[in-house]
Image (cartoon, helix red, strand yellow):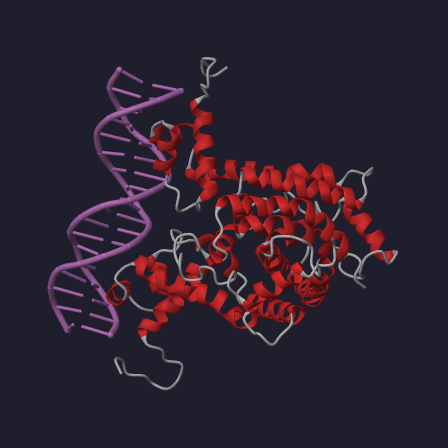
Length: 204
Length: 204
DNA sequence: GTCTATAACCTGATAGAC
DNA sequence: GTCTATCAGGTTATAGAC
């Protein structure tokens, strides 16, 4: 063990830095976050940050990696389950994403803003090669879904589930809603989105 | 007139600066954009930027204003038209947004990232008080739509139309698509989204 | 491992010549 | 109006003491 640990809520300095970095990088842009902010948030000194991680970029890469993981990993199991139906997968996906995003509402914008700059091969083809895609293609072939690019199916699920979190400030502003009302809106969608997806797939 | 203009593609320095700023601020964060970048992009000197606009913040405010305008203004007319049906409004909205976003794909992330920091009263209640909202509320009361928060209707239209542009890098990456395929996907949605919205509203 | 001090560089803004 | 030169302060990263 590198560092002595007392049992109570004592993390290693290294871990405290990573957590501070994750918090700040997830809610603000790379350039908006200053290394001093991270050091302060972690309760350690600026020099220590460079001792553990060689540079701001290196630290950001770690946070990026963790956030991408968090965003994608949790659904890989769902979309590749060969035992569940399309409808069941949609329900699982919607619930999984809503639960995650209620805890980390800033995650989508982070992912969408930073997916370009890295992880180019990390999740490449991960959706395309999933079992869900095969199910959707089969459903289209059988005429049980509109004759369309199957990507549109997954895109609809993701759009209806994730966009409300990305657009939260806009929604609250343009409809004069408070946080409680927004939460009720999301909970309503938890049950409605799967039904909607079902209905959408019946158009010819 | 403040500055002499030759007729051919000669804009005032002031305008060139604004356009350079819009380009850069729209595709990168406030802190990621350096005033020197803007000056270079505009083909003028750094000092001139501060001569016309007192500070980086002032210049950003102008760009923000223009982008918010561009994002919201174009739909105000559509959602307040008392002559068109809900279905017609949806078709108009989808087409208007897709056309706009094909030209300015970075606009949604800019708007969603910056709507907090300003324009708090700019578009407040603009959706809530629209004629479309009244139509939707009436449809719900008549049982022609699911018994839900009417905000969910507008939110579905916006989600299905705008999210694909926000998620473009993710979609291209996880489905191994190129730009041409992405464009075809969007064009397919242009006709499908209104049909889908129609079908969604028939669930009980 | 952790700190203070500081080097080396970057960035927004201004002074002053033309 | 437009430029060059430069200032003042901030920012990342490192040197060196403990």
